Length: 485
Image (cartoon, rainbow, N blue to C red):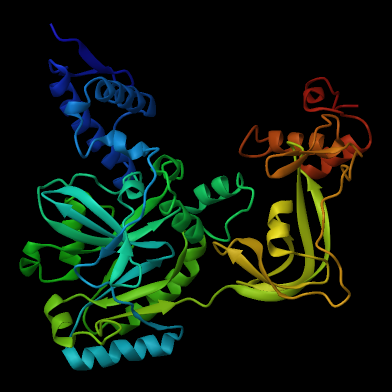
């Protein structure tokens, strides 16, 4: 009798295991493809991570033993390969044109009015302009056969092996159709912070890191970066039966693609709703888990699009509204070092206060010595300051070197708090003294924070007082200290 598989979270018996390695490989492949879609596209996983990993490992073991039964769309291809890619050139069957752009809301609304006059009453559809890497996906009989970068719009690079590691991009569609899809590959902000923190020379923004990942020579390295995607266009034989862009997006969802749920349809003649949408997106972009640098407004009706046609540069039926870049110019007044709870030393620039993205910035992290060396930063330099993701202040570039000849800033050799010799570990310097008061404060503050133990009566000021006055010397002493004294 075949062994029963159980979902140990729900204790519901599942289908019996099919006999033979070929049948089991096919069964596991189908299961894992469904689970990947639930997790990465629908955000509604039906199995635990542990159960998924168990099935994945079983499939990988079987494929290693019986490679002749491995499917071209196997879920194990998501982990990438150690073979090096050569990034061959790909000629796009359908040119990937640019979009007409504007930074002016008035110009955008004038474009809407002009387009309505040319087309009559027309619906518009608006999409967030994801700040990522444009990608062109080609499917034959429902299988992903090629993924290419936009390149110059006519010729791109083949990055198929690396794109197969992006888990929200289906290797096999839900139906065996021929299709060319376009979308954006991006790196979520949380993942960007985690990955960038480990790099010797951090990337300036998620888009640059996503682009660099797609050009990794080994897809196994690309697979270590949790890229994501949104698909926003599809070209397939049945398109003649799809009258609107919304219908195209719905069809893409049916086929298994991840389509941005924030895409918005506007009724004909409702230009005020478009204006309100722009302001709403301008505010809400600060809370999004990914970066957007604008919005794209398109005609919804496909026949109307065909009637308007194209210039040699862009379609007449769409326009990109670009948000103003959140940057300012300031001068580095000094560079201090901060000691974190792990002992990591972080250089922080004190700058002349500058308004960026609606708030005043006076302190900016410089990450590590490699980052400072890359930008050749020195006290007195005039620099551009941005807010990555509209949140985190960052020095992006030197606009003008200081006039007094200050050299590139260098990390001190000792901890500024306890005087211990600093140790270079990877890209970062560390204070290894476990009794360093800065480390102790950081550990206790973290321990008492809302995300950890949520000790309301133990705020940062109280902790600093206890450590600075010698009442507490380590996190463990919290359990023995008499707070009633």
